[in-house]
Image (cartoon, rainbow, N blue to C red; front, side):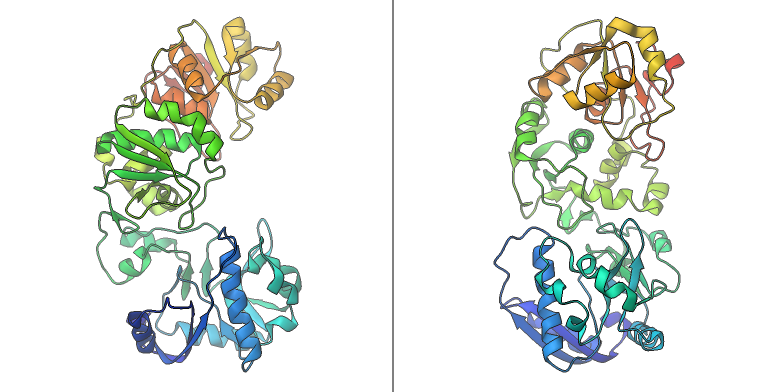
Length: 453
């Protein structure tokens, strides 16, 4: 903010007791004409999102309601001002709009005003229930009560529902909406650095890419793709857990139960020194979850050429030049040899134009389904005759079955990542909305006529 010049308005620094540093206070005095402080007791409840975040907003809302009832703009650390007159533009739009609330109204899948917004001093007169919300984000919790009183200023506040965009090159700035004076969300400092002309460094959220300790939350298939990047990076220690506070979240973070199922397979990889489960990412561990922040920035994908989830892990570690499409990276002891063709089809990432019936007609009794019982039941209801289902005791056994088979027919799923990591002959059902795990291999195909197991 200091780089944009001093703003003619008051900044209220709200912080947990004992957490404000002199440096922050000094910078605030350089960025704003006046600075006030609101120190509050630390949050002591469940730290799962969004409970602590709600507590912070609720504390400020009550303070403003009790002290003067002036309009106030709520900012969070991942909201980055862009223009020298950003406060003037926001203020002008707010007063001209004539409504008590002003912010970026999100309309899909739920309509609400993003939390980075202007609130009236008497906000609690409009939405008292928001002071009791715990499990729902405060901005969504108040939507039903405040939307009718909200001025949409999306042209000034570029809000993104995904968490933590990364800006690693000046070209990445092109994703920001022209005319916006605040961008939300970027929490790794990269946007500020690009705006200041500071070159990108080889760090991921402050951790040098040279480190050999890695943290990942999943999904399961993403961890398998990450293993290839870890191998080409030189190997190291892998820590798995659900901590995604600073990154775009995955849909199914690894649970302790899934970790136990995955552990034998991870321990079998010679380039993995140790594997641990931790609820929080240890300081100094490189956060591989950041690959999603990169993946969701089309400028980074286009410029880097990282056109798959696997490749984006390589780009994150600055080793994209070491990537090879046709190189397997998984080691599985005691593969279960067979003449079978392994089938897997998860409940998401489906392509309804894929010729599953042709697969069944061509390979018949050679087909063997692996995966969850629910996945098999749905598959069997849709495709006749029923193919055989093989329950497995763990993910290592699944990998052994895939490793010893003649080929695989799978959609974009965890079993598919195993087949790719093992270098198996594969016919992939490509999800047209997200074709993010294709490999340029002689034994990788997406059409039945080219599948030669």
